[in-house]
Length: 160
Image (tube, rainbow, N blue to C red):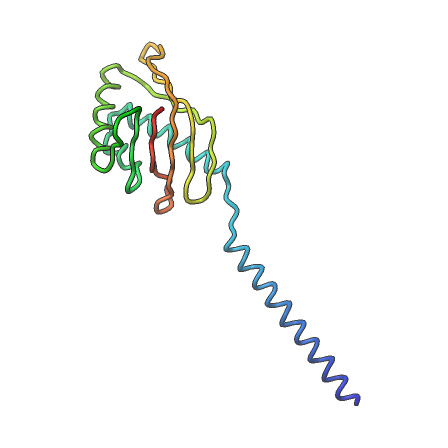
């Protein structure tokens, strides 16, 4: 009888130990799968990318600007048809020629940002100034950013 009680006690102890290990392993695995998305960090990345976009536009780097767009990206402005694919590079070239002729600088200000680790939606204001710092145009925009190979890229660029 004493051996039977000892056996049952050891069996229950081993069973409890195994259950604890599985629970901890499951918790660790769940924690690794459920990474917390840091929207503040993503916002800082988007702010840097907005500045980079402005710099590339000012310097006339249409190829660099086009590289900031994701595969399958589209630009939409007003009531015009969406610009996709290689048309984006052409549209950016026209925009650059116009801004360089007027010696313009564009400043993007994010007013709202939300999303997850795959897509972000940014709304904001864009202000263009000439070399005398006079405002030459103002507008609103919505940009859908898509994460491609670890980098945020413009997926939908919508001027309002």
